[in-house]
Image (cartoon, rainbow, N blue to C red; front, side, top):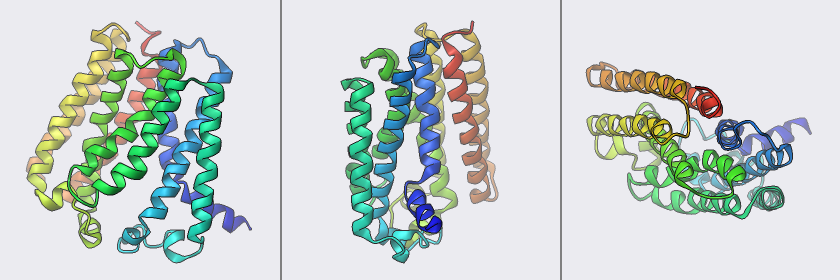
Length: 287
């Protein structure tokens, strides 16, 4: 029984859930300036977690043909048949239904709409576009930017300039993050027939795009302070981590082992995300 429960739990891609909850909490704390309404907070966390879980289960359901061709995913429960596909679909439906119900009951309609956009982008638009061209990564970045934005709107009740900046920060962060994954797992993506950027345009073009998006991330992050939403301590921290990320990106042009370099850049992108989450959380209450 415990093994079955674990399989269903893994089907939700818990790593993705926890990473996105971290950004959702950061957005909430920025918007609330630590004047926390615990009812809204827990409603946001539970709702967002269940909606992301729903999207991840549906992603596993739809992509099981691709997963069967990739070394890192061929042992997933829907590929091996350990979980029946009909059960997975019902599971996803219930997760989404409860998740949106909680979000509607305890937050606001703006946050619910953001959740709807996020899951539609991830399950429908991203699923279609990632099989057709390199622009699938850009399309998928929309859903990944929603939790940070939703955390903020759960408090503010509106999608304003501050929310837009948060959305752009996460959109820019995701692109080099996922390009790094596509680079060091290039063989897997080629075997599955997924046209990721390094497979279609080459590694050099991918590295150039990474630099552009890292620069975009630095500018967007700094904009929170430039528009008066966060203090200068936040700005100093984010400039430091952003410029270090840029330095690693530039080093890629001299890398002898692109896969090894890409893994290092990917690892640092996670440090950037954690730093961003902490900095955003305290950005409005520190000097």
